[in-house]
Image 1 (cartoon, rainbow, N blue to C red):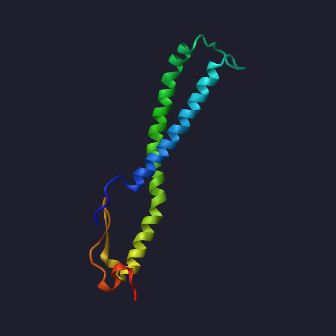
Image 2: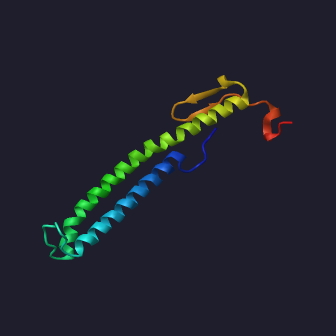
Length: 130
């Protein structure tokens, strides 16, 4: 059984989780920048001389935070997607075993997934059961 072309479900979920985390981080960094650029706040010790100075000081920190969020989002998203899809895999294999009636003909292949080594009998093709 060949997989359809395109990204896998796990990779798609991983990219969506990481993208959401990056978007949230960008919104927070933009809000922080504009908050600092507005002027003096209670408890802020430094003075902002100009927007260019603030941007020069703020940009390396923001880039580091976004890099961390990207790595964290991809690794965490990959693990989370795996946990979310594991029950679906078990349900699919159980349904195949029950439908085919012979649990020994479904084998797990590492890195590929599940393969069926025997065809179901012809009475079950097309979804007609009687």
